[in-house]
Length: 240
Image 1 (cartoon, rainbow, N blue to C red):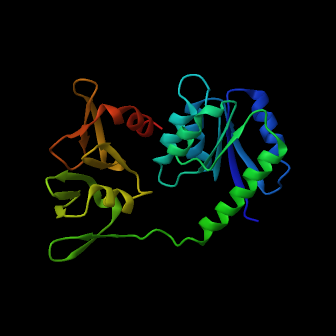
Image 2: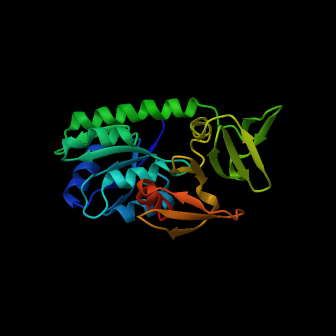
């Protein structure tokens, strides 16, 4: 069985101990680290690179849902399992693509079920081919192949989608949604209904008006608008 590295995130020591005990019954599960807060969790994910994060929802300050949203924007995000006393967040858990949702007080069979599901997920992931190094971009009379890391911004303009790279701009009739799906897992973030930004190219986030912001992106003279609906999640991701 493939080893599983886990991070436990809960502000209650007793809950972490209980979960650690139940997971220790599975010899291939290794507790890489434990976090007591959202900020500590995001730091430890970058350091330990766990396969799965067991995440409480109510930890004071930032919620586990907020943390999960930040995790999903990482290059190679770990799986997320919510471990919480609150049964009413299932819809939110689905929105951030959590693998599972277990309720406190933890039961042995519930944790066993989660581990079995993790085993299946890890095996399936190992069988998936590595992501393509370049993505195809359908132009008017040719197909251009681009490296995701060279793309800074993608935005909609009329019936065209403009793809801004470090060297030039390409126009395609592929939709922004299609581009977003192709670039999944490559640190691209929807900052506005008409804009998709590579977080690695972000230079500065500037307040604008009515709660909205503007982004300064490396290699671009124009600023990128950030809808206020996306500001909170964007900041959480950039500051993770």
